[in-house]
Length: 81
Image 1: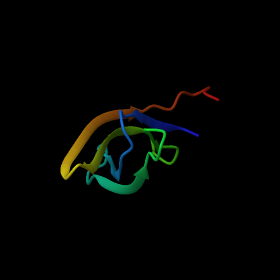
Image 2: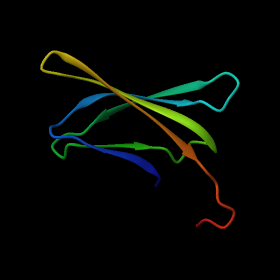
Image 3: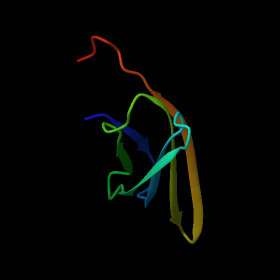
Image 4: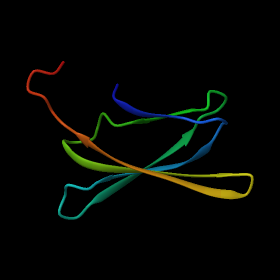
């Protein structure tokens, strides 16, 4: 399964927003996440189509709000397995 993986120093719980930027009208999908004791957040991207995307992670810790934003691109290779 294809996924984006983020490692943190502590457990976090929040919402990830995936937005396909390469569409004339960008579409977003929200995914709840919880790293539990592992401190690792994995967001599945197997359903993402070829093109440019943005992921935004939102979470709270000790009454502070945090946001992490990254852009990435899905490329289909003709002979990929």
